[in-house]
Length: 304
Image (cartoon, rainbow, N blue to C red):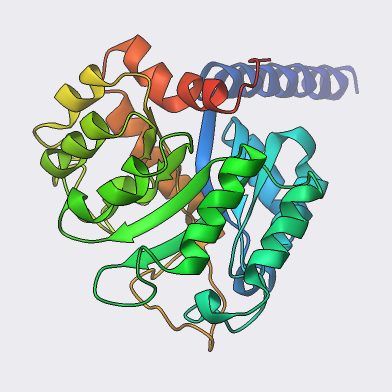
């Protein structure tokens, strides 16, 4: 009987030691804090994951701040309600169902944008897409109207462009020098030779490196996840104007996915690892700027 008690006691002690060791390992391996400048909580993601589960994922990965835009736009507020100050909601002009490709011809889009910004619940406008050769034109009255509202309410604009040259975006940022722009995905498929000239000509443009992964875009790193030539030089030239985001959508090449839910949040760890991997190739201070400090300064948030 005494021997059995001793064995049980020993097993209990070993179990506690094991738990302590696991706890220390988890704490030691905790990733440094990051701001995720580009996430979504769209209707076809809400079908498979709750706002509380999204916030749990972000906190698991030590994301201290995230910027969310959603379809419909008020879905972003659901994440804000669950995550509090950890979430900044942007108002998307895709403000109701079924207008992903016709948002710029909706008669109420500008009045809805004004109402949303006046509420104080939204910290910016976007994401919206401008695709060269397709609608809307960059000088469309609704596009101009949204930018004017951003200037009036002093909030940034998150723009996704698809074009082969920085000259497509140039008139937008050049003609609106008092508006702060976030250029989504560093311009899409273009590289540092295209991104650099725009940053030089438009000091009101910050670049966010979202969705630059082996599954989509793929113009940031090579096959071994090494930074492609030119990026590090550009980061060093503009150390305070780059940020990072994950854009957790899946099969992004499929524009029309009405027939299935978007399981992007189940891949968040992969996206997070990808970005942290290439950031580790940079000097510590520069990596911290891109990972954390630049975004906090952009939104005038003091680090906790």
